[in-house]
Every structure is written in C-alpha cells, then in structure tokens.
Length: 215
Image (cartoon, rainbow, N blue to C red; front, side, top):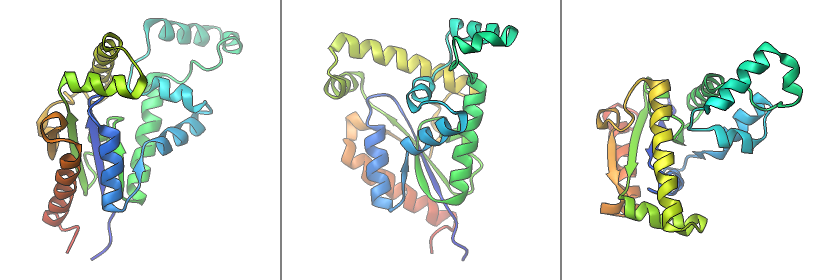
C-alpha cells in the first residue's frame, strides 16, 4: 500500500509533561517531535524573533496590544516606534495553522499544542492525545523546572490555563478539554509519565492498524 504520513497531536496542561511525552513518543515511533521547528518556521515567515512569537503563542493579545495595533493602522508612522506588534492574533494563528498542515502533509511527526488537535482534525491519519495532571504535581513540576515559589507556580498555572482556554475557544469555537475530540486522554499524576508514553505509543499503533495505515 502507499506509504502515508501520520500526525500525532498532544494537547496538554502546563506542567503535565506534554513536552516530555512528545519527545519520548517521537523517539519511540522514530519520527520527529516538532515544537521549536514550528516556532522557528513561523518566526521566519513573519520576520520576527523567535522569542516574540513564543511570547505570543497560545494566548490572545491584551487590550493595549490590540489598541496599539489599531493606532498603527490609523497612523502607519507609529510602526517605526513600535515595529513588532504586528501580526494580529488571527494572522499569527493562520500562519501556524498553515505551517502545521503543510508539515503534516509531508512527513509523520508529533506536534505539541497550538490547537493541533483541531487544525489536523481532517488529516486521514491523525491521532489526538490530551494530557492532564493534578494541580499539586503541576506546581511541583513548574517549581523544579523554573525555580518558582509555590505561589508563583500557582499563579502561572491559573494564568496559563485561562489563556489556553480563551485561545482555543476563539480559534476552534470548541471546548479543547472535551474528551470527544481525542483518541486518548491521560492523567500523568495517576499513571506516571513513562506509562503515559507506553499507552500513547500503543494508541498510535492500534489506531493506525484500524484505519489501514499499517499492515
């Protein structure tokens, strides 16, 4: 049969081990884990620094950012003073969406976040995974990774969870935590990260077999 590409998307709460799962699963499957590559690609297309795109990803612009963009639209000369506020949220999302779809059409890969669960919903060989974790363990993870206090980690979780919810809702018009959109939902606090990798790999294998990807 014709060799087709397949795409694995991982949606996750911050601190639940999404990047760990993505890296280990990609290694297990022998396909690339795409996170920074997408960031670099999008930054290049928009002529922005990677840090600028990274700071914008997964969240909607604030009122003042949108207000400043509107002022630049009215008076383009202001762009010399604030050159990097463009693109808009929609423009950034569209470039990311196009980038993800083009990559998925060319090669098999594991994609992390960026509404991939919805962007690739029509891909014929798409496996979608949702990763969650208990708040206590998420706090511990963020404290360890970034040297935060418990209070700062809790604040980061509240902010990130809300931003992620708003972002997904705006561009997909759906509830990204609805289990019906996923082939596999896992709580890493309950099963551990290594077990999560095993289950994810098995899910990929079984679904591809069922839809005729593998002999």
